[in-house]
Image: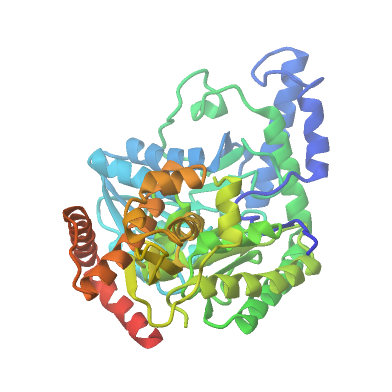
Length: 388
Length: 167
């Protein structure tokens, strides 16, 4: 069989769009200045930085471009949001609310704060990974300082009701942070309408380069920096600013915003073709996550009687790239906390596979996957003691 | 993550499937942890009238390393006398696979466990003398299974249901 390279792991990372790369290139060479220098070189870099800040503010509908600060990664942005709010507001209270399906950088930041004397409540989700905003309202106490809820989950693609959650937090006067890494510039976000105080987004998930991310911080929010130094990014994130990556991030967001409507429609069509095809063609297969409230590019399945790493590696031998929530593929040998939180049993989590599509996924890729995956599943089931 | 040899055994595993009316079965691992290996053996005699593993097959639920280790351990044991087969250890499986990532080492232990359990099962069924070493080995596996069962009590009951409905 001819091997076609089929990348279906766009939720992990994306290739840089050639238009983005073109926009970045001058900032490595002739426009190399340090954005804090006073001379022409520095000011040229500064101008590019501020232009990108405006692009981001517009995409989020932020009031002021200075509510955007740039960081090196979504992990850094989430760390800054959670620890920064905790440190700056500990006199008000030491209680933080997150969900049980946050990305590990939110989860581990919160758990680290627990060791520093903070209290953390983890809101449970239903079988689709949905959060009930009422549960958050119930969990907010007098000493609650922050609610951090993921906008769209990275594993199962479930889109959370963040506007409702935002309104609750506004009413209760608690800071609301959302990790929008998978959703930003892919589905509409409006920080004012959704009552968001802090928002994390990342470049490499939307066809920009790795090494750039942002944190939206609403004006007036009390937050402590984690990195101290030369006062960059309004004193909230010292470090020489990574201008080429940030310029690329900006260009990538511009493209995504311009193409969002058309692209999400196209992706939803492909996604549903993939979902329906898999469920129809493969017995004992199930969809993880919400059937409707779902990112346009996310699919996540589980297959009984077999293990996900083996599925991924067999697909890989046919040139198809995907990922799994199985313990066997994780460094800690623990099954995905997201799928467990949805109520799946560990063995169901081991048999789960995430396939995420993107800008360059074509109908032919889905056809190829739908031709290959049933064979992979059948082959591995033949080896399994649980199948007759 | 995986070398060529491991991937070869994963893509085209040797000796997989069931043996009808096996002389011994070894069942190890736990689906909750993500690895389950069943090894079936059929015993025969060689020209010197020594008992040998005439046929061996495996069924494995697990990752690439688990499947490759199962394939390799059955390759190593096939045709060997029981005495020789009992000497197969983790190091030999690892060496034959040209190594596994440290995080996957347990898969090779599990494969050896499944083989030794199958032999133990045959010897016990036929009321043979069992060496101290093999007895200790069997007791360790039983102990470990109990620990896991205790840890995942709630899950294990569900697992048994899956077994029952499939058998």
